[in-house]
Length: 107
Image 1: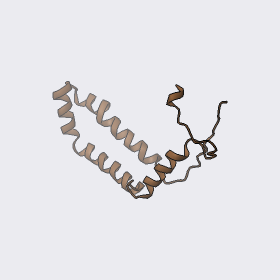
Image 2: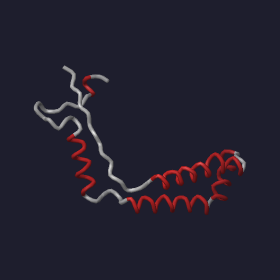
Image 3: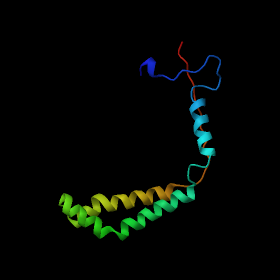
Image 4: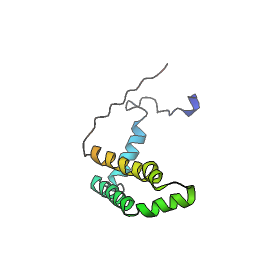
């Protein structure tokens, strides 16, 4: 990385180079602009229901545009999306995570 691309901090700032961006992100989060986990999970569920409900339409569009068979459309497109949604849904839970920032300064 070029030195001109590095984030510099004021001399004597013991909080490190990540403190300003983290503070800005925390302030944005505190405004309530981000959505709660329950809302995000409901959106994932709604997307899954949409994909299952509209599967025939999606398969038809993939056949018309890309000449994919219904089996290929499901296995390569719809099925993968549903699988990813299930993966995310199962592994998403509210928890606190400790974050440790290690700062090394070169002289």
